[in-house]
Image 1 (cartoon, rainbow, N blue to C red):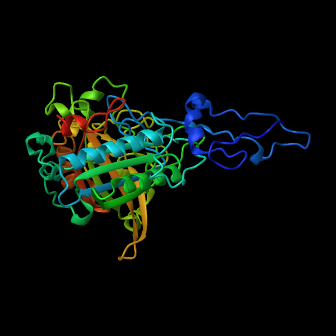
Image 2: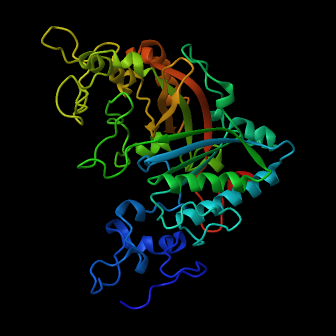
Length: 422
């Protein structure tokens, strides 16, 4: 069989560290890494005697650099962390620039873009032996960031505070923030490792304001790729805008000719923690749940007929002479046709934080909506939902935030450089 390989600095024969996986996973592609060597006379090769192949989940890589930040158009991963930071008292523009450079360099390292290893000062080895697992790290700026760094002249109009919605029950301690980081990965330890690296790299420049942890279905858990389900059991995300659509970029990204210029290629993220009142929801019959949503629970097909991807026919009349899609059904109230064409890209994570003080599950949706302008995307849709959506009786919006997410960066650059050094 020959001698087992030793990873430099590992101190143990056969060790297969995260550094080596990150440096080789990109060449493996969707097929994963190939197991090297052959079985000895005694049978199957022992795990400690040769590298172990990465599956397609582990080997999947999302580049950190590019025109747009990663973590927007890619499918939401199996694990997610949303974290808001507040700058430390006295922190200024220069401090913020140094922080964003540290964060960007760390994200490059962890995603395998650029330096092959995570900076030693931050690495806790939690994700050793794992591949990139579709890791993305996305950065954004809250409205208060601009006043704290003396950049109010560059504050985008689209970052105006979200209006108050009558049904909101917001916790200000878990809302807003100077800076925002979205972390996603298809492996829980890879996601946690990225979270710890980002927190440690913040140093004394910023402190965590709030953190929320979420999850989705793991890739490969179904017999074929499918639209995910939320904690109500409903297929969720069928009518999301798709990158293949001709007007996708117009809906999601700030155009090159947009203002301010430092936001060209960027997007705006609305973040809402939406608790689902699952005990009340589960008391409904499946037929009643379907009427509230406007889709079949089994396969996501609209009640107006067809399959999951069949366009919803809002004018369809059922055999009983009533609208097939009820007047207050979620799919009707949320439809672009019901909101003057307003649209946004939803990229959410479910969450479950145990049992609340009311004895019910503290569970629901970490809703993240991406759009070129929240005043034309999220705001009009939420106003409509807040007053007319039958689903709203089973939801409670408990936290809210809005962040300007600048475009991506190139080699040697950091996210937000055009703002902080412009």
